[in-house]
Length: 145
Ligand code: SF4
Ligand code: SF4
Image (cartoon, rainbow, N blue to C red):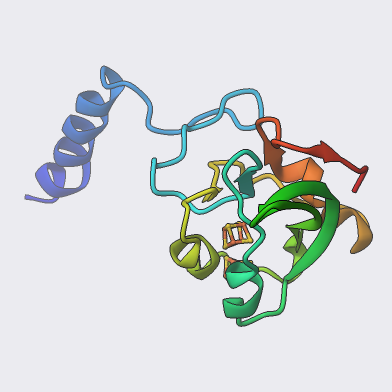
Protein backbone atom coordinates (compact mmCIF):
# COMPACT_ATOMS: atom_id res chain seq x y z
CA UNK A 1 0.00 0.00 0.00
CA UNK A 2 2.81 2.39 0.99
CA UNK A 3 4.78 1.44 -2.14
CA UNK A 4 1.73 2.17 -4.33
CA UNK A 5 0.90 5.56 -2.83
CA UNK A 6 4.47 6.84 -2.28
CA UNK A 7 6.39 5.41 -5.23
CA UNK A 8 4.19 3.98 -7.95
CA UNK A 9 1.55 6.72 -8.21
CA UNK A 10 3.99 9.67 -8.27
CA UNK A 11 6.20 7.83 -10.77
CA UNK A 12 3.27 7.32 -13.13
CA UNK A 13 2.40 11.02 -12.91
CA UNK A 14 6.02 11.99 -13.58
CA UNK A 15 6.21 9.66 -16.56
CA UNK A 16 2.98 11.08 -18.00
CA UNK A 17 4.36 14.65 -17.83
CA UNK A 18 7.71 13.61 -19.30
CA UNK A 19 6.21 13.43 -22.78
CA UNK A 20 3.99 16.51 -22.57
CA UNK A 21 4.92 19.94 -23.98
CA UNK A 22 6.19 22.25 -21.14
CA UNK A 23 3.76 24.99 -20.09
CA UNK A 24 6.48 27.37 -18.90
CA UNK A 25 8.21 29.83 -21.23
CA UNK A 26 11.78 31.09 -20.98
CA UNK A 27 10.99 34.77 -20.40
CA UNK A 28 12.40 37.20 -21.58
CA UNK A 29 13.78 35.17 -24.51
CA UNK A 30 10.27 33.79 -25.11
CA UNK A 31 7.04 35.70 -24.57
CA UNK A 32 3.47 34.49 -24.28
CA UNK A 33 1.16 36.45 -26.58
CA UNK A 34 -1.28 38.45 -24.41
CA UNK A 35 -5.01 37.88 -24.72
CA UNK A 36 -6.69 40.02 -27.44
CA UNK A 37 -8.63 41.75 -24.62
CA UNK A 38 -5.49 42.52 -22.60
CA UNK A 39 -5.34 46.14 -21.41
CA UNK A 40 -1.78 47.36 -21.91
CA UNK A 41 -0.22 50.58 -23.17
CA UNK A 42 -2.64 53.00 -24.84
CA UNK A 43 -2.66 53.76 -28.53
CA UNK A 44 -4.48 56.62 -30.25
CA UNK A 45 -5.39 56.73 -33.92
CA UNK A 46 -4.61 60.38 -34.70
CA UNK A 47 -6.53 60.28 -37.96
CA UNK A 48 -9.73 59.58 -35.97
CA UNK A 49 -9.28 61.47 -32.66
CA UNK A 50 -11.58 64.52 -32.52
CA UNK A 51 -9.92 66.16 -29.46
CA UNK A 52 -13.15 65.96 -27.44
CA UNK A 53 -11.35 65.34 -24.13
CA UNK A 54 -13.87 62.73 -22.91
CA UNK A 55 -11.04 60.31 -22.13
CA UNK A 56 -9.32 62.89 -19.90
CA UNK A 57 -12.55 63.81 -18.09
CA UNK A 58 -13.54 60.24 -17.23
CA UNK A 59 -10.13 59.02 -16.00
CA UNK A 60 -10.48 58.34 -12.24
CA UNK A 61 -6.71 58.66 -11.67
CA UNK A 62 -6.21 61.88 -13.66
CA UNK A 63 -3.65 60.20 -15.90
CA UNK A 64 -4.65 61.98 -19.08
CA UNK A 65 -3.66 65.48 -20.12
CA UNK A 66 -4.96 67.04 -23.32
CA UNK A 67 -1.83 68.33 -25.06
CA UNK A 68 -1.65 70.85 -27.92
CA UNK A 69 -0.84 68.90 -31.05
CA UNK A 70 -1.33 71.27 -33.95
CA UNK A 71 -3.71 73.62 -35.71
CA UNK A 72 -6.31 72.64 -38.25
CA UNK A 73 -8.49 74.69 -40.55
CA UNK A 74 -12.23 74.32 -40.01
CA UNK A 75 -15.05 75.74 -42.13
CA UNK A 76 -17.56 77.89 -40.17
CA UNK A 77 -20.21 79.14 -42.61
CA UNK A 78 -18.32 81.09 -45.26
CA UNK A 79 -15.22 81.48 -43.15
CA UNK A 80 -12.25 79.20 -42.63
CA UNK A 81 -11.03 79.41 -39.03
CA UNK A 82 -7.97 77.93 -37.38
CA UNK A 83 -8.68 75.59 -34.51
CA UNK A 84 -6.20 74.22 -32.00
CA UNK A 85 -6.10 70.44 -31.91
CA UNK A 86 -5.31 68.61 -28.68
CA UNK A 87 -4.64 64.92 -28.17
CA UNK A 88 -4.36 62.90 -24.96
CA UNK A 89 -0.97 62.31 -23.36
CA UNK A 90 -0.71 59.68 -20.64
CA UNK A 91 0.95 59.45 -17.22
CA UNK A 92 1.09 55.64 -17.44
CA UNK A 93 2.67 55.39 -13.98
CA UNK A 94 -0.66 56.42 -12.44
CA UNK A 95 -2.82 54.29 -14.74
CA UNK A 96 -4.73 51.33 -13.30
CA UNK A 97 -5.62 50.07 -16.80
CA UNK A 98 -9.35 50.12 -16.12
CA UNK A 99 -10.15 50.93 -19.77
CA UNK A 100 -12.76 53.62 -19.04
CA UNK A 101 -11.00 56.10 -21.33
CA UNK A 102 -11.22 53.61 -24.20
CA UNK A 103 -14.88 52.83 -23.56
CA UNK A 104 -15.89 56.49 -23.54
CA UNK A 105 -14.04 57.45 -26.75
CA UNK A 106 -16.88 58.35 -29.16
CA UNK A 107 -14.90 57.62 -32.34
CA UNK A 108 -13.04 54.55 -31.06
CA UNK A 109 -9.69 56.13 -31.80
CA UNK A 110 -8.32 55.21 -28.38
CA UNK A 111 -7.43 51.56 -27.80
CA UNK A 112 -5.20 49.55 -25.50
CA UNK A 113 -2.43 47.42 -26.90
CA UNK A 114 -0.95 44.17 -25.62
CA UNK A 115 2.24 45.98 -24.56
CA UNK A 116 2.82 45.27 -20.88
CA UNK A 117 6.55 45.85 -20.32
CA UNK A 118 6.36 49.43 -19.10
CA UNK A 119 8.85 49.41 -16.24
CA UNK A 120 11.09 52.48 -16.10
CA UNK A 121 13.68 54.00 -13.77
CA UNK A 122 11.97 57.36 -13.37
CA UNK A 123 8.39 58.63 -13.16
CA UNK A 124 9.11 61.01 -16.04
CA UNK A 125 9.89 58.04 -18.28
CA UNK A 126 6.35 56.81 -17.69
CA UNK A 127 4.90 59.91 -19.33
CA UNK A 128 3.79 59.05 -22.86
CA UNK A 129 3.15 62.18 -24.94
CA UNK A 130 0.41 62.16 -27.56
CA UNK A 131 2.80 61.58 -30.45
CA UNK A 132 4.48 58.60 -28.75
CA UNK A 133 1.21 56.69 -28.41
CA UNK A 134 -0.25 58.10 -31.63
CA UNK A 135 -0.57 56.08 -34.80
CA UNK A 136 -1.59 57.13 -38.31
CA UNK A 137 -1.08 60.56 -39.75
CA UNK A 138 -3.40 63.33 -38.53
CA UNK A 139 -5.23 65.43 -41.13
CA UNK A 140 -3.33 68.63 -40.14
CA UNK A 141 0.22 69.74 -39.60
CA UNK A 142 1.21 68.47 -36.12
CA UNK A 143 3.58 70.15 -33.67
CA UNK A 144 6.07 68.10 -31.69
CA UNK A 145 4.63 66.79 -28.38
S1 SF4 B 1 -7.15 53.04 -18.29
FE1 SF4 B 1 -8.34 53.98 -16.60
S2 SF4 B 1 -6.79 54.81 -15.22
FE2 SF4 B 1 -5.76 54.40 -17.17
S3 SF4 B 1 -5.86 56.31 -18.32
FE3 SF4 B 1 -7.65 55.13 -18.92
S4 SF4 B 1 -9.29 55.78 -17.53
FE4 SF4 B 1 -7.33 56.46 -16.64
S1 SF4 C 1 -8.97 59.81 -27.77
FE1 SF4 C 1 -11.19 59.69 -28.09
S2 SF4 C 1 -12.09 60.44 -26.18
FE2 SF4 C 1 -9.91 61.08 -26.20
S3 SF4 C 1 -9.90 63.13 -27.11
FE3 SF4 C 1 -9.59 61.69 -28.79
S4 SF4 C 1 -11.66 61.27 -29.58
FE4 SF4 C 1 -11.93 62.20 -27.56
